[in-house]
Image 1 (tube, rainbow over the protein chains, first blue to last red):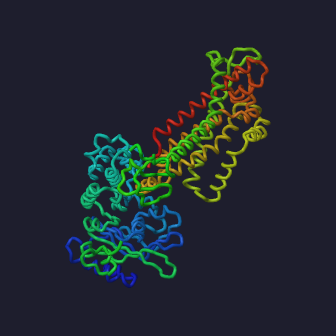
Image 2: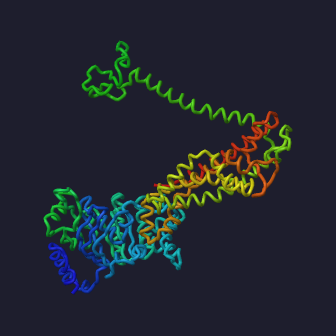
Image 3: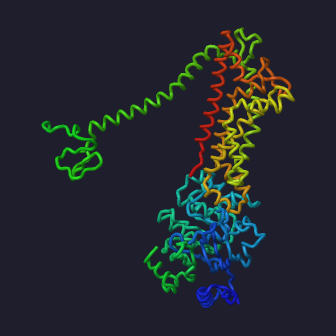
Amino acid sequence: MNHEMLMTGVEPTGPSRLGAMTERDDTRDGKDLGEKPVFTVRDLGVHYGKNLALKDVNLEIRPRRITAIIGPSGCGKSTLIRCFNRMNELIPGTKVSGEVLYHGENIYAPGVDPVVVRRHIGMVFQRPNPFPKSIYENIAFGAKINGYKGDMDELVERSLRQAALWDEVKNQLKKSALDLSGGQQQRLCIARAIAVEPDVILMDEPASALDPIATVRIEDLMQELKQDYSIVIVTHNMQQAARVSDETAFLYTEVDEETSARWGILVEFGDTSEIFTRPRDKRTEDYVSGRFG
Amino acid sequence: MNERPDPRDAGEGLTVTDAAPTTRWAGGRVGPGLSLRECRPTRRRLWRNRRNTGLIVLAVGLTLIPVVLILYYIVSKGIVTMDWEFLTSSQPFSLRRSGGGFLNGLIGTAIMVGLATVVSVPLGILGAVYLVEYGKSNWLAKLIRFFSDVMTGVPSIFVGLFVYTALVVQFGFGALMGAASLAIIMMPIVVRSTEEMLKLVPPELKDASYALGAAKWQTVLKVILPSAAPGITTGAMLAVARAAGETAPLLLTALGSLQLTAKLWGSPIQALPLAIFDGARQPFEAGQARAWAGALELLIIVLVFTIVARVVASRSRISR
């Protein structure tokens, strides 16, 4: 029933792919049956001012999975991920069309407060951005502004443990977060996002500013977090997408020959293994085999 | 070795001792297989380098001359009269008499600058928050920015005249009127310096706050203002230092008084710069001596404020 609904009103190239994906889901393993998507994106389009940035995106984010968004530079990966928690509208002139259903509810519906949306959907950014405060206060910040009434020390410890940072910082919680290394700062930012107990964690190239060892730690951490959270990650690193994600969305830039305007489109979305081993689209194949990008 | 001519006498730029130059660059020849030690700057280049360094040092020296002279005169002439009595007593009623001090002026300055700070700093910070986070570039923000710039450039005597017509004519001279004129002078300085500091707060920090579900006012209060606090403090301190030295507007609002008073209104009140002005235009040496000491006192106050501002700013400046 869900599939029928999805297939209607989707652009011509869309339904078969989405249909194929959901069919695979049905047969893959039993527990997927009836598992409702966390996000359903329908005909999503984004304009920055007059420029189209993203066009006709349709996809589903499944719970407790890692969904990777890959594609060449400038194809709208970050634009897409910022649609999931309405961070896009912090940039003046941004217009979003279409629907992003979060557990069936459109987060862009009139009357929905973006602040409330962001309390459910956490985000980790490309560059580690801890507040210039102590480690403890960084974690406690979100809880405080959301009116957390419980034991703050306990929450800080639990969040840091979940982010695999506790052992490294437990004796220096009062120290400035800016004194940590880049990798530690990024794990602190993940811990900070976890502390408000979100449902989904969005990660916009979380490891691109980190060295390989720190990157591995973040990737391991993602596998752990997957037990409790749905994760969407943007990455320009195909190996990373192949290593960590369960499902992959491939975005690509379309160019208007006359105006040379460029915008991003979703080319293919499906199981990561399928995308990397048996891509349906020529462009996907070229990209994952490293022919461009 | 000795027979070889000194290569540094040759042309310009880098010269090599080897006689087989292959490339010619702008002002220098570099040959293959030569160690860096064999390439030496020519005498001409060395000379130019020294000459230009010398010119820069000279320019710095010239700029420092007035500053050093001012400091020298104020300290050497002020220190003579500066003593415990000067700091703890008020002006004598006859300015030709020696002794006494500027305690009345010090207290007046403290009251007026204090009041002006209490009013102008919070208002100025709020105004800057509006400019950076809310108004951005709408017409109101542009208007406020424009008038702040105009106000920073307005000669301070105009501010005094304005307060004189608006308040003094009705309520008489007093500390409140003096404070009002100082607040008007300080406000645009605080607005503009705070605005610059708020603009320096990295957008990533705001993103982090919003992504955690913080509302805008929470982000402003808990993230933006604390991150910019050191810079805002510096700006406020500089405004205080500026107000402490203002004389012209106080002539028309506080008027000045030889009496020690802490009344907020109803009677004229003295201020340090007014007391200096009083003393300096006396033909009597005792008055002039007190003016020098007063100048030293004011200089030290302003210096302390500036140094405190710098220390606060450097201790925790906005990172990243």
